[in-house]
Length: 193
Figure 1 (cartoon, rainbow, N blue to C red):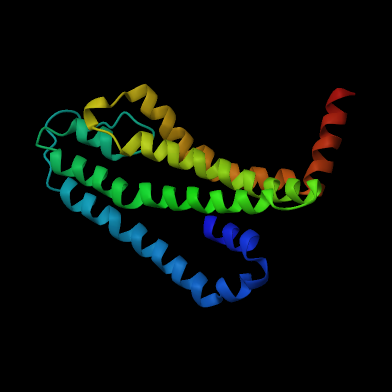
Figure 2 (spheres, rainbow, N blue to C red):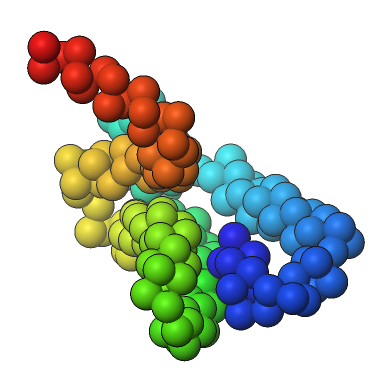
């Protein structure tokens, strides 16, 4: 999405050439391939672990860190794989997104009209909010040693990651829709009467 926003704002006249169907398909295939291959290494390493004590994962879903805490075998390789995955995948994509937004913001600041700048910032602000919440929670959960695992804090971050991030974008875009705004105003007026 950051690349799409970058092209739409920084190269609007070339957008349909640069973001062709082939380019879109390549981006989608890359995302699906990486999303399939990355957990494969974790699954292979975790399948070799022994679990001696409780088999109850006290978490909102079966995640790597709480699962490693239940294991009675050496978990160093799995923990290192998580950190390496984050360093190779999460951090560079976050950096790419950040750099694209530096270019986007510098182009928006060149827009002469206040209304034009406001519309462009409005379009990007929701995506940047979603991206920031996503990356902060991902890095907070997965790019740290398992020894710093804190169940209550991690459950909160996992809840943000699993529930808030997927809901945030549709909520923000729904609130931009005039029909939704009108319906909310009618509802609010009924509640105040």
